Image 1 (cartoon, rainbow, N blue to C red):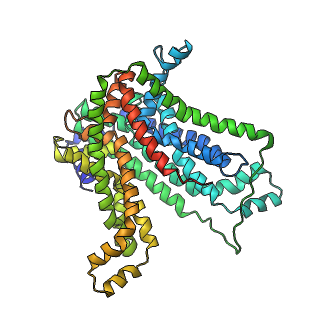
Image 2 (image 1 turned 120 degrees about the horizontal axis):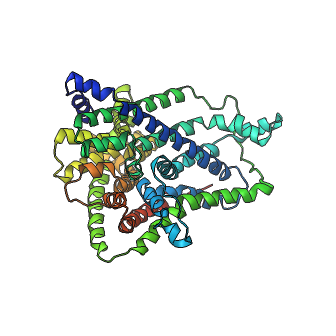
Image 3 (image 1 turned 90 degrees about the horizontal axis):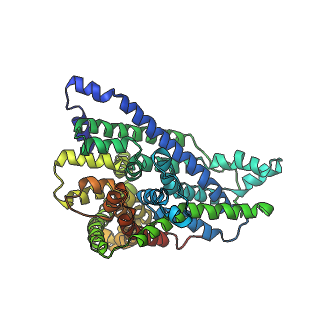
Length: 491
């Protein structure tokens, strides 16, 4: 939490006149409005995309629902800035669409480009939450509503949607955090939000005090969202009030609308996965150069050199946070267990900026690794904590009764049970670090190359052919990881 305190000190380290000027700029209001419009727009588009898909893959009598569920999750394999690269490379006079069909599409940029790229990238978060919630609904509620005369649309609006509020809130918060912390998409699309302006002020205008104020504005925005989500969830109570057991769900026959359901799911996959991936592949083969492989190997080694120690470090550090939160539950331990989530809620660009203010130099790769460990620690705590809830505390007690010290009891009884969760945490953080752009961009040493930075640099100069190989490697790593996550997906 030290970076947050230093960020506040840096913002107020100016004279009174400059402080008022930084605080009451008209540009701050414009940035706030742009950020709100983009966040709300992405939420609306994600709801329109993910809600029908989640309902069709859980309640409708479609065949191949498992395959369509996997296809709806695959956009997670395409980082936001790679999605922006694909959209930018698709349009324009020299774009892929013009090369294939002889007619050029307008090149997406600004608000609409950022909106589409971020919506396509974040829609799986809402889909996964809604799908899980829909599978957990009690079918008797829907049957009771239909017995009272409600048609299917009325049942969905009056019975199903109100029970999906926790899923909407949880996914909505996650989507908002991604939009607020995004740097790659808004930079490539040239749409000014707090993150983009923060980068401009620090890296180009060298107005560090104003950059600190922008970072605090971003943090205040994030804090308001966290408070709002907590307040909304505190009023939700959706458990069963009576006795009885849940029954198996009867799938709803779509009849003549079945073809529409198949068409919608297919078009969603084509728009969010096929077109972006095909655009990246087309640019890669269109301007492929053997010499580019040298830089590609260097960038891959650079990304792996950060991802491996970061992921291993997160998996190790997640153990004490998870252990204290589960085995010694109290108000104090719960506060300690929430610290990684508080850090994760800080937008990456603001977090990186606070690190630079404290250290003042980015000559060592250790700074970037430490920042990645602190930022992604929250993603590692969950997988490590789950086995602890399933492990009986009597295991340690039995080991202690046989003469083991507390550390011996832990490593002989609990630690073997945590290894699977630690491996999952390592994989999660490894992928997240491979795709990370803001932290890497600001905290990497000079001349240190990574895949994400090369994609951003080349795309910013409209050099799509040169950016495509780096984007392809990121896509490959991401697709393999997403495939591992969903290999046991069941409907």
